[in-house]
Image 1: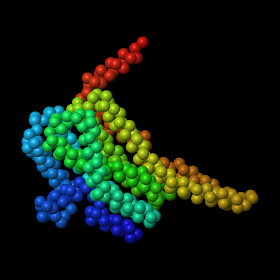
Image 2 (image 1 turned 180 degrees about the vertical axis):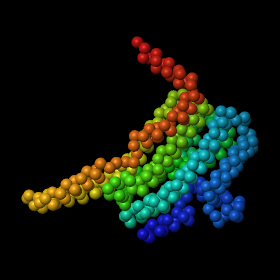
Image 3 (image 1 turned 90 degrees about the vertical axis):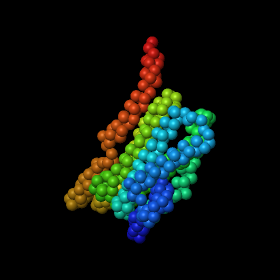
Image 4 (image 1 turned 120 degrees about the horizontal axis):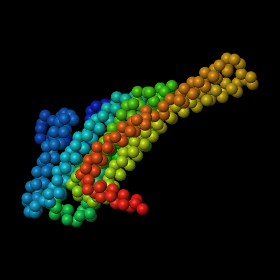
Length: 365
């Protein structure tokens, strides 16, 4: 149980944190002696991050003035402002997600694991997920890739944005990349490790064990978070008309496919955990039944009654749910996509009407 205690202590001491929190904590410590020895709360993080982002925007304005950039294209300026707001909101949401993730591990997951090797593996996974070096390089490369892609689409991007705003935007999207890193690292851990841990589950009905709804809630929040990321980006690009209509339609399709795929992956994770526990118990019961059936050529009355009881127990376990997620949960997840989709359609109504007209004409004989 040493690894459990050590990992819980490390979580309580703030050893695992996002690079966003690390940067904010470092700046707060430099500017405020009171913040130097205390870990920033979620509200303090939000305030300090807002101040940092405001300072970066101001730096972009000053940079444009010093470099003598001509009047910035209004369309791209609106994209810049919306992008900053989007990245700020995403950083705050990710920090909230990290807090819930760590709390679930500390209060529920560690106590539900029965294998010491799984606890050691979890500790190593936590070090990987919260590696500051990995977060930094992923975020930087993510930002450079995003800007390289947009510059390839529009080589005049530096002129439209201004070198000051463009440079600062690289920093903003590094923060964006830090958020994406956590999501990718977390999802990789869930798919590769979480479903393979050995859990202390209720044998009669594994899906009703306390840890299962906790995991279901955490996995559902990942779907909501990814939907928020993709839907917000889709709304920003569609409302500012920076992408052609075909690309906007493609982003809507990607948003729906991504959410459905993520739902199915998370459902598979929970189902794998429950089915493994069920079949471990079912195989034991089947072995007991075979042993009793081969005990005597003609089973005694007591043996037959024992076999019948075991079969009833076997069928009762087998009939329990394989997943806590029902079809109603799937419909609820899909409903989260309705409003962003309607928002995109409303902001590109002419394009959609034109597309419907072309499709209608194509179907006419």
